[in-house]
Length: 140
Image (tube, rainbow, N blue to C red; front, side, top):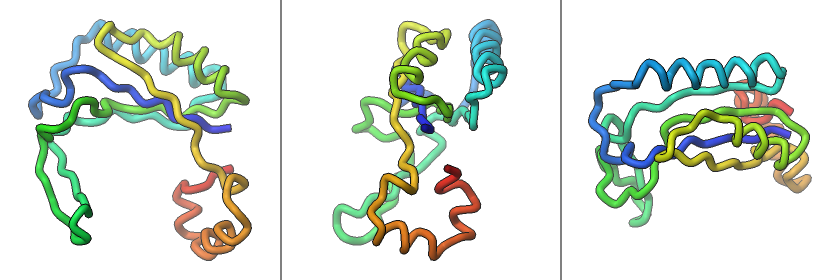
């Protein structure tokens, strides 16, 4: 089963566009990433720029409305993610606990939807888009 581990760093919601990462923290995180790779469970990982460099598109009015970052109402934002392939949620939790996170960071773990999670009707619709599936919607 694939799980996404979402890094949620406090303070990132108001961070400016510059990336000033502490080298020692990056070294520890890269060693952790290498552990995931060496264990054969790492599917993907990426860091994300702060919200101040992004935008949100909302549909509350029925029409798309664009809001440039930073987002005043944001209390938690993503700083990056890992996708791992492990048998159970408990396995994902054990790997998340090994992360060299700092006191201001939280990791949320979410199971990725797989094709077999959907009804047959939904599977039939999704299978009608093989080029999209090839890009990673369902790698299982």
